[in-house]
Image (cartoon, rainbow, N blue to C red; front, top):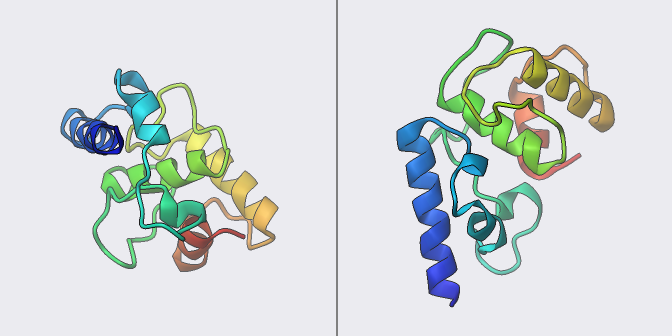
Length: 128
């Protein structure tokens, strides 16, 4: 059963990347949320796969940015419980993502500028 859930989660991520749509629009989304995505002992965002961008230090993203780094930021914002808009993880840093970023920064008590730079990436990946 565990292998099946892992496979479903992997398939959901691959399908999401290839289709450029939100994982919530895919039928296997419930399996993706329940499947273990990291080794035992991992907690927080590290245990939730959002690896759309392969770089250790992704580029700074802000309103108007697009691409995989934005998808990763949106995925992490959603993991921490912030609303990123009705279109979900779409790779477009628009108004909803900007508001979610500012709310996240306010919650973590870091500079509120709506820009996801090194400090905000660190907090998104590791928690406040």
